[in-house]
Length: 248
Image 1: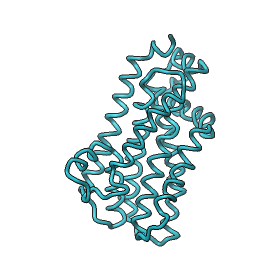
Image 2: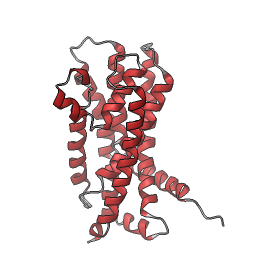
Image 3: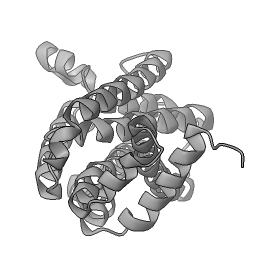
Image 4: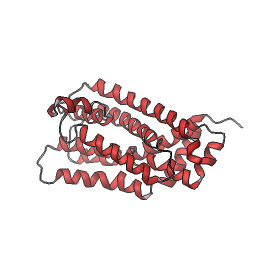
């Protein structure tokens, strides 16, 4: 029998995660309901161009959907003891985490593609190439970020991880130029916003919808890819360091 590559094994793990976690309560609330309620609150009483609202909607959707699944997987599986069985099988921890990341990526991709149809109905002029590359790179970055989010603390209580991840996500949401353009932020806030991967998705989507942006589109792409690699590498490293503590 031909030995399966780590990538194919990670696909099997991603499929398992998709079947188990996509309909979990926290995933549905934080990944589907919350971004639309938040967008509705932002929309009420404002008369903004459709292209600007499209950028806001797509940024929120991409961000919240791709970060909804990942933080819940490891704690839930650690509590049910399936995580212990998984890493004791002939699969590396990196492969397991790659599968978890893919589950987050596919969930975000599916919902983002569905929501992006709003742009078609509103007849928004969008550069499809820039939009597609920006969304894919952002989904990779945010999905990798969930691996880092779930790495510490090494707990088997999903609520602990969800609380910490929500704090991080809300912080990034309000410093990333979604509600206030980066060009209008004070200098100190502008520097802080550069630490958020969400900033570069918002900026790239502004390029895609022909709205004035702060960075070049190539800068946005390179930094989104950089964050994707950085978060995954850091997440794997921390998971390796705290692995034994999860079973104590």
